[in-house]
Length: 81
Image 1 (cartoon, rainbow, N blue to C red):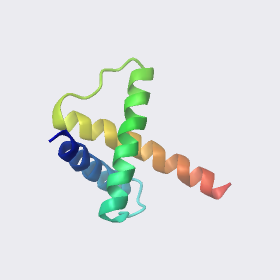
Image 2: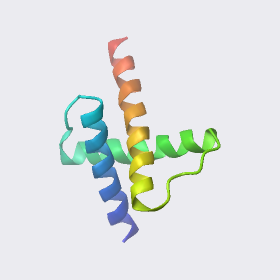
Image 3: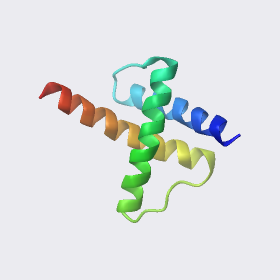
Image 4: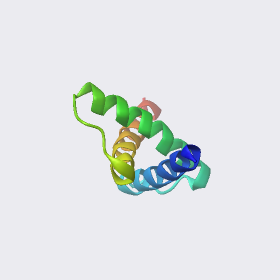
């Protein structure tokens, strides 16, 4: 059941990050990948800053979305270089 929650959080966070960064969506699978990688990035950033990670489903989505936004911005910077 944890895999289902991971995929759900990844899908929502990836879609949300795509909308916020104004790059549009990346499709269902692309949004999931961006969201899951974003969850890893967001978790690392939050731990590094000494901030408590989000609690519950909503907190996980927020942390993953912030991480996905950071990931998308970094990838766009690398792509331009």
